[in-house]
Amino acid sequence: QVRLVESGGGLVQPGGSLRISCAASGFTFSRYTMNWYRQAPGKERELVASITSVGGIPNYADSVKGRFTISRDNAVNTVYLQMNSLKPEDTAVYYCNARLVNTVSVFDYWGQGTQVTVSS
Image (cartoon, rainbow, N blue to C red; front, side):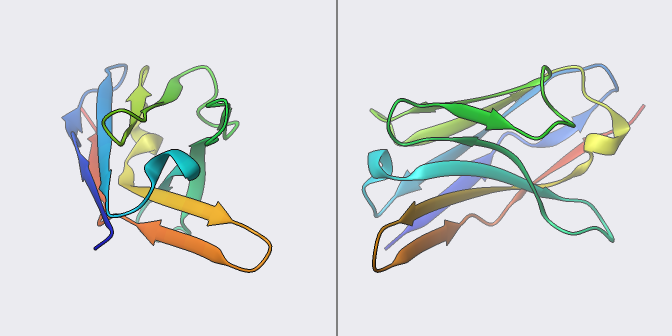
């Protein structure tokens, strides 16, 4: 059974930091690109950061570049998102996503989300 379980969300003041985690099970984690998406109320879900399966190469949305860091630990099947210098506009539900694309199929798994609220 595939599971992606996010944790670490919460309330933080503007300028603060938070690290959220996503623990994966039920699939070969190291083969998947891992992504963090977020969705704010009334807005579409957007890709925040991704990290490749091979080489662990990160990529970021312009809105978080320089403030957020994505990392992965294949030994414990976990992906992290370190969020620094948080702004109120970072408030959203953050979702973990695992994706594998090959020539015949797309494998796409989602977590249940964790709420991040940036407010004073």
